[in-house]
Image 1: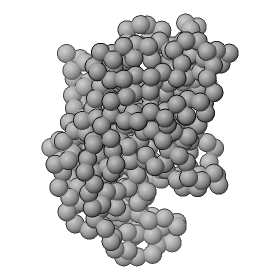
Image 2: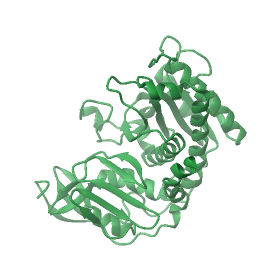
Image 3: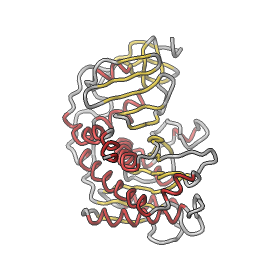
Image 4: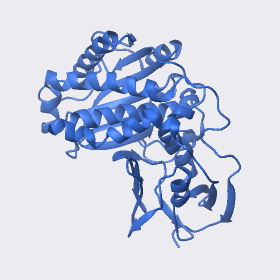
Length: 352
């Protein structure tokens, strides 16, 4: 019963991923210039996606219907879609008295998550590449109960079994305790058609952090959340950026199942430029299944039941993604629909 209640928080998200093709969008976009970037009023987002009128209470912002919701806060990059946490590329801000979200986050996050059926050039997924992190001399994070490389491999082997039983072809970047260079892992993923790439890891931190998080590739021009700040390398196109829309849709499907099934603290869906993500032409994610540096997380990770749960979550994520995304026929426009947004002002200051 408790598991059902936890899952029920996210059923609308999973159902919406599958049924998003039926969404009907209306209206035109209004762009506001601020700090050299384009922003879109959240009220405009509500109109376009038929989420109702924007509700604001202090800094809290919400768009909501009976089975869908978007929620954020002025000045914060944390943004929730049906209670699932996403970390925006840029914080929600206010321009000319209007709460706004960056156009980058609209086109590279909201659109493919809310309307995955409109993603172009998607393929019918029949293959999964599982990438157990570390291996050999590279042990990864450590706890009193064991090390990351062994836990990651165990989850991958369990996921391999349930995926194969469900009819998927499965390849592994390593199936034993050996070291595989990151570039080789990405190259293997790029060679396989109709595939998804899932890299399996566990976290460590010195500040008592807890919970699960999911990374996918940062779009071109977006700072990596795993770096200290913006860098010139952020503007270098990566092989994986051709899959930006599929990447975030896969991250959404994966993170939702991990959070629902584990009831672990939701650390959010984040963007980074890890080698295995940036060098792979296959839609991919990197999951962090908890903190080996946190005693509570570490005890859970050490149990076979938790690792089996992670494996089942991976299977559910792949199935949900496949049902939601494709393949689809090309449509007139995807992430910038409708075309020809109108720029109505050129702001140089943020909150007014």
